[in-house]
Amino acid sequence: MASGDVRVEKSEGGRLVTLTIDRPPLNVLDIETIEKLGRALDRVSAEREAAVVILAGAGTRAFSAGVDVADHVPEKIAAMLRTFHAIFGKLSTLPAISISAANGMALGGGLELLAGCDLAVAAEDARLAVPEIDVGCYPPVALAHWPGVAGSKLVADLVLTGRAISAAEAKSAGLVSHVAKPGGALAAAEGVARTLLGKSPSVLRVAVETLRRLDRVESHRRLVEAENGYLRDLLPLEDLNEGIRAFTEKRPPRWTGR
Image (cartoon, rainbow, N blue to C red):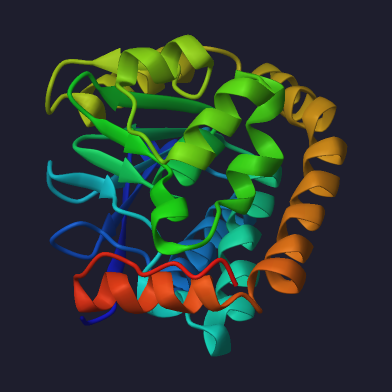
């Protein structure tokens, strides 16, 4: 599959920037597409013109079905984790408020990215899950960032079972801030953005930076631990390689417990 693009669109005199992950059909994130997203966020930060950034997925089938399984192979995992996790550092220091908008599915890294923005909008029929357990791994960002929001028991349920939840359940858990009608996540996010653009940009910036700062130190420490555990304890397991092979071969995994 070819690498995707990240479309950048400016409106409201440059105060609103929409970044669209465009890798059809499901906006799966390979390393190159993640790097493009990172560079787009860097440009927004450097220009300091935007007050709000919307992060969306092209089409209505998926915000993103997650990080490409092809980049979970042992020789790419370290680079993939480093590149993907850097996105959350960029979001945490973005001068603009970030709003994610999910129509369709947000799976694995896609759901982590959705929930990693300051505000998150999901269509009521969206399918949300972190199903990494089914391919023999786990979602480090969810382990690091979500317990303080959704509670450790719910996070354990989602991570260990891989089950999908609705937008309504995600909102109840604090992973999503707004639920939109089917197919209407982007329009709803634009409505939230227009509300924000009517506020003082300087006051909004101070408020959101303070919110992020209160959470940043502990979340960063937890993410480092989650990433170290992935590389130190998970990567050597035979079942990780088996899970990836089974997924690519479209067959049930044959777990050995090793």
